[in-house]
Length: 366
Ligand SMILES: Cc1cc2nc3c(=O)[nH]c(=O)nc-3n(C[C@H](O)[C@H](O)[C@H](O)COP(=O)(O)OP(=O)(O)OC[C@H]3O[C@@H](n4cnc5c(N)ncnc54)[C@H](O)[C@@H]3O)c2cc1C
Image 1: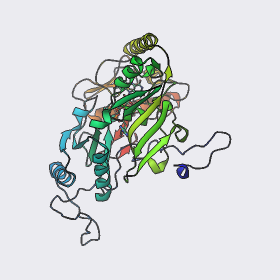
Image 2: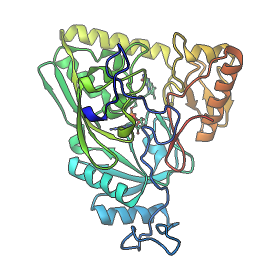
Image 3: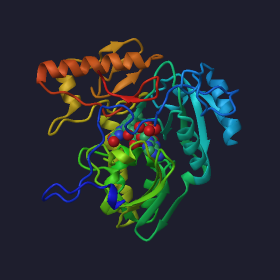
Image 4: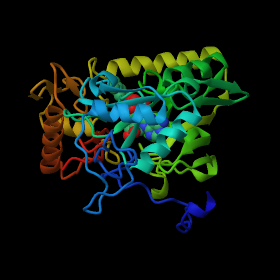
C-alpha cells in the first residue's frame, strides 16, 4: 500500500487526502453507470449501434434475476426501509454474501457490467431515497459475522453487530470499546464512519483491516497506514468505494467488572441524551468546538415537523420518523436546520448521515 500514499505533509507524518466529504460516490455505492443491463442480453459489454452499452429500462426484478443467474447467489428486490433504522427507502436489489469468494464475485461482476453497487451494514447512518436505488446493495453475512479474541486483539467480520464486539471485550476483560455502548450498526459501518463519541472513534483502534476495492483487489491495511479523522476513515481516493471485510482491533487489558461498569455508564448517558424513536443518529457533524444540536436548538427548531418527520424535542441534531416519513421530509428539515444555523451562527453544518440519491450516489445537502 505504500505506493498509494502521497508524501507526508511536513511534521505531521504521512497523510492521505481525505475523501471529498460532500461529493458523489464517497463511501457510498460504487456507481460507474446507473443504467441497467438487459436481462436477455447475453453479453452486456457489447455496444449498441450508438456506440454505447445497451440502455435498458428493465424492472428491478429483472435486474435481480439477471444478477442471480450470473452470480448464483440469492439476489432479491427489497424495500430499503426494512434495512434502515429510520425506516425510509424504496426498493433495490439486495445481495447477501456469506464469504470472501461470494463478495469477490459480486464486486467483480458489478465492476465488469458497469452496475452500481453499494454496501450497507445496519442501515443506521444512511438515508435511502424514497424511489429506491438503480443499483444493488450488498450485505455481509455468514463468515463476515465471525468474531475471535486473541490476547488483546478482537478480530471481527465487518457484518458483526457492534454490540457483539463490545460484549467480547467485556467478557475477556479488555477495555477500549466502551464508548460504543448502545451504538447501533455493524463493525464495517462503524469503522468506515469512525463512529463514536466527540473525542473517540472506532477506527483509531484498528490494528489491521481487510478490504476489497471496487475493482476486486484484496488489500490489507495496517495501523500505520490508516489515518482516521472525525467521523471518517479518511481512505485515499484510490480506495473510495472499497468494502471493509474484517478488522482487528487493539484493546488494553483491564478487568471485566470495570469494563461492565463503563459500558453501563455509557448506555445510561446515551439513554439520557438521545431520543427514543426511529432515526439515523446525529444528522450533522459537530463543527469544531461546537455542538450541532445546540446550534440547531438555538435557532428554535426543536419539534419542527415536516410530513412524517420531526426534529427531536430532546436532541435537535436528531430527526425522527414519527409517522411514515419520507426521505424528502428528512431532507427538508435538514436543509432548514442548515440554512437557519448558517444565517444565525454563520456556521455551515456538514452532514454526518450518508445521503444516497436514486442513482445510488452519495450526495450532500445542496
Ligand atoms: C439512535 C442512534 C444513535 C447513534 N449514535 C451514534 C453515535 O453516538 N456515534 C456515531 O458515530 N454514530 C451514531 N449513530 C450512527 C450510526 O449508528 C453509526 O454511524 C454506525 O456506525 C453505522 O453503522 P451501520 O452498520 O449501520 O452503517 P450503515 O448505516 O449501514 O452504513 C453507513 C456507511 O458506511 C458504509 N458501510 C457500511 N458497511 C461497510 C463496509 N463493510 N465497508 C465499507 N463501507 C461500509 C455504507 O456504505 C454507508 O456509507 C447513531 C445512529 C442511531 C440510529
